[in-house]
Structures are given as structure tokens and as C-alpha cells.
Image 1 (cartoon, rainbow, N blue to C red):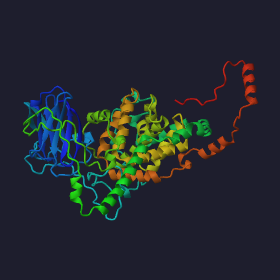
Image 2: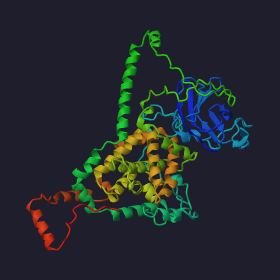
Image 3: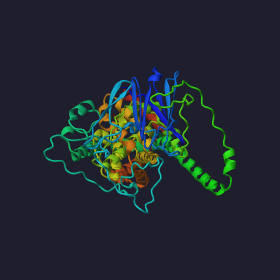
Image 4: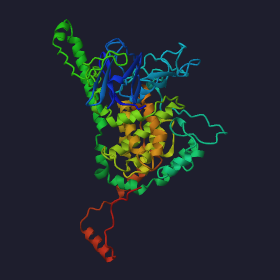
Length: 556
């Protein structure tokens, strides 16, 4: 069965699902609604969605089919009017099925749609205690803790996780030592991969900093990474970039990415909205009837193809062929253009597998996200937001996660590793530029999981589309794209706050950056003039045909 392209919106009363199903027989369409689950079938398409709250079948459900566009619009009534369904744009999360059956119940039931038998979980299992085989139990809410409000509002899904505001990101949490009998290493996202070391090294040898991945340990990978960074660091290159900082580096530092502008618009809209709400609360006394009388009438719906009684639903032919605007858009982040997923990004989400993760080391997973977003920020800033053919190499080489399979236990060591690589490998090597990339990373975390997902999808497209590095996308980025849709908003906002206040000094990097800058300042600057003519004469006398290049070499 094919999964149709779809998008979802909502208003106070309905969740509207828009499905793109060209060249189908409208009379064969079937729907299924129960509690939070919605199923759709028409040959050759099948879609199952699990919403964060309940929908009901009460006669108000409607559907229409636009023949010209090949689009089916389904309006599903909310069980509680006015309830907001969170994360409707995180499509992979919605496509994940409900928890599996409890022990003693049938694993699956054969459900028939249009004469086609589909294996899926029974809607009414014989054992009423159906639920997940593993119950995740977290700490309850902590009284007196003032939580930071990020761009993405929490939907209650991460309430079972630790309160990120009080999380100490520089407190090391060492993993348990691996047993001696283990014959091969585990690596990748959540240490879920093993046995592919030779394959990965054969394909990604140009960017990989690990000599023998299959027999490596986390400690050996880190040691190899540090040794390679020390060998690669070029003092002359760093000094040249320091001298050229006004002409080359400063414009990159001054560049304002789109996500900075997006955060500024959201914060401004929230400030205006907070002021308007306060003013309205003061003025709103005995005038509800007058305000109601000034409300404009709703526009009439456009006519569309009638689809009566399809799949047991009352499908009103007056249903609109386009999703209704959401009335929950009072949060400006929900209407911010930069945070809206494009059709290409939605297609990527639909292609991702439906997984849930039981993380072995949650702290390392979140810190790996910091490492990835730093690499993205450097590439985005140095290319002014226009990725080049070298961007996959830049993203991979600057990320110790991708190129060295390194994992981190504190925020400080994560940032130190990222800054070291930004000073050792790429074309532009500047400590102030690296610190601006740390600020970019903090902004992305502040914008929340949607912004981070957009970044990860872009990295996945760039790295996954490169023949030299696509395997690294499979091992790391695919899983990160799925996991971030269920990540804790509290932890993300905690990291945003920590990144805003973290202090990384040049002495922590491990190289004598202050001494190199002092030495660069002592180099006499050639002011031009008569000396230039003398230099040209010397070149000709020596038999040279070309002038000696004055620009620094491109570091590959």
C-alpha cells in the first residue's frame, strides 16, 4: 500500500486532513474513526494517523473530493470543542501506531478495507489492559520551579522526563564499561548499529577520523579525534585569518540568518500579544453582546463533488476542499513562515520510519544534537544560507559525531570539540566566528523542535545525497530526524538557556591562540608603494613568469 501525501490543520471544532490521491474512485473511499485513531483507505492508498487527543464520529464528519486537484478533504470532529491538538505538523510522529498489545492478547487482527485484508492491531483487544510492554515512569512536577517558555509549547508528552531547567549539562554521566566478551563495537544513534564498520569506512573514508570502527571504543575514538585535530591545526592559517578578519571574517560574523529574524518576529509578536491580552482583560466588562454582533459572518463553502455515506460517514458535499485556518494560531510560532514545513520537508518526514526510542544515554543524545547544529550553523553562516557542493563535507567534518563517531557527556566538552574542529579543518578559521556559531545553535534550540527538525532534514538531504557520506546519514541523521519529533521541550529549552550563558575561553581549546594572535599583530603590514615596484623587478630578474600568490591556500 502507498502512503498518500497529506497535511493537517485544525480549528476549534474540527481536525482537517488533506490527502492527495489522484485518479481514484471516490465511491471506494473508506474511513475509520475511533478515539485518537483515524484510518483511510482507497486503492492503492492507506494511511493511519494517531492524534494527540480524541476525535469522534457524531454525524458532523465531512469529506469532499476535488477531481481536478485529486485531493480529498476530511473534517474530523474534535471530542472536546476548542481543544488544541499539538504537533500536527510533525507527520512522522502522527503516523506512529498506538502501543502494542499487552501480553496475552492477539498481536494483530486482520482488518478488511475494500476487500483487501490489512494486518493491524485490533481496535478492541480481548484483554482490556492493552498497553505498551514498557511503561516509562518519570519524576513528577517539581513545585516552585519556574520553567522557561520556548517557541514550541509543551504538549504534556514530555512530562515524564526530567525537568530540563534544573538539569546540569556539565555534570558527566559516564556510560557503563562494555563487557569484555563483546567482539564488535556499537555506534551510531543510541549505539544501535554494529557490524557495518568496514562498509562505513570503505564509503566515507574521505571524512572519517576513525581507523578501525568495528574494534573501536568511545575512548579510542576520542583519542584519535584529538590527535588528528592537533596534527591538522595550522598556526600560519589561523594567523592569516586573524589578520584578514576585517575583510573576510567580520562579514560572516555580522550576517543575520533567517532563523534569527524568525525568533525576533516571534518574540515581538508575543510581546504585542501579551500587551493586547492585558489591555483586553481590563476593558472587557459588560460588552460581550456588542462584540459578538460585530463579528463578520463565515463565508460560504465552495461546492465540490458529493461523496455521500462513504465508509459509514456522513460526507457532506458542502465541505471545503482546502483546510480550514487554525484558530489556535494565537501562538505566533505556529504561523511563523520559517517554521512552516515545505512540501519537500513533509515528503522527507513521510519517508522516515515510525520508531520510538528507549535511549541508553539521553544526555549524550541531546549533546550530540548540539554538535550537529553547530556544524550546520557554521556552514549556514559561511555560505550566507546558500549551501554549496562543499557543504556536505563541511557538515560532516565539523561534526565530531558524524566524522569521529564521538559521544559527549558535558556541554563544555561538546562545544570545545566543535570549536577545535572549526579551527582545524574548514577554510575560515576564527575563534569569534566559532563563538557566533554557538549563539546560532542557542537560537535554534530556543526556536524549538520544529526549527531543529528543519535543520536536521536539510542536513539529511545534503549529507544523504553525497555518494561519499550518505551512509553517515543512515547511521545518525535518519534516527535524529525521527527522535527529535518526540524530544523533551523542557530539555531543549534548558540547553538553549545553557548555551546562552556558557563561557568557552581560548585556553580551553588546547592551542596557544592568544600567543598566535599576538604574534600576528607584530607582523609588519605591507602598505604598498615603492616596495611593490622593487618586488616586481626582483621577480622578473629571477626569471619568474607569475607573481607569488599572496592569498592563503584552500585547505581540503
